[in-house]
Length: 376
Image (tube, rainbow, N blue to C red):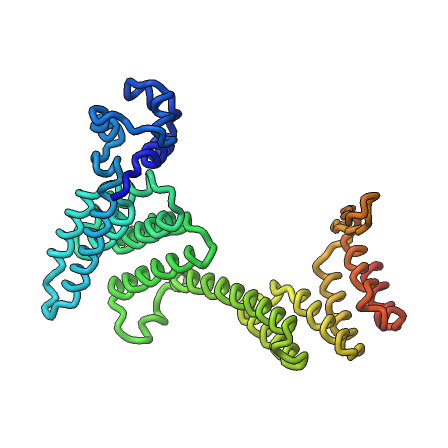
């Protein structure tokens, strides 16, 4: 069985934000000794192991790393036992499950995964306040982002179960928006608020909903609208990336690409169905005029150029600034890039002076559109 005392001492010291000197002072040894322990040049004398373990409030087995395998086995056994109890014909095993995880979280205080799982099971089948204490203690020292987010989400939902909905939302709002984690928690909290609303107001039939307070009804619906908008936005972004890759690799025809772009634009319109003025269609128009230029359908390309420019005039004020990229070559033959700040309208006009527009650069519709862009 592997001894991992060197890496464990280093990890424990850093978790307390201690220097090697500070730790050496606390243990009554030289800083050089601590350095050698952490580098693996030698191990602490057996007499000092209890002092090190006691200082970090762990067992000697945990300090040595020899308890990890036993801990993981016990954790796996607990998970298996819980599944067995949950599958029991008679649903009277809640107390046994809660006791199982109470014992585990007490005996494995340094195993953060055990603490997180234990808190969830204790919240479901035992004392929710006890589960809150476990999660708050875990969050005070956990640096694993994934585990932290799981613990935060669990904590928020426990507070929602206790009908402390404001505290539940406060905690959920500390979750990252990446991956929809925050919105997922908000939705679950909203569903618990909704159930509580039904139970409290004894709503039994559809017309009871219609008689409910309008402002409160809006507050119930809002979390789902936000989550829907986030989902649609992510889906549309992924869809665009997939389409671009498929077209680049020749996995779809140009006609299919155009139809899918139109479908994606419709998908985005769903997101903004209540506030259509907030939908910025410029990326869509840009994709459409680009693909029609490639196919040689210049009239359709110019249709989308004109739509793009109309929206650019609407959304980009004359005072806005943009950037121009100048590409050159230095004396060594390496490519150089030089950025300069220019009016945003001028930067946009530069798009229509690039090589793809050469076939239509003298077309009256393009000239008129650019003049409109620069004069408004």
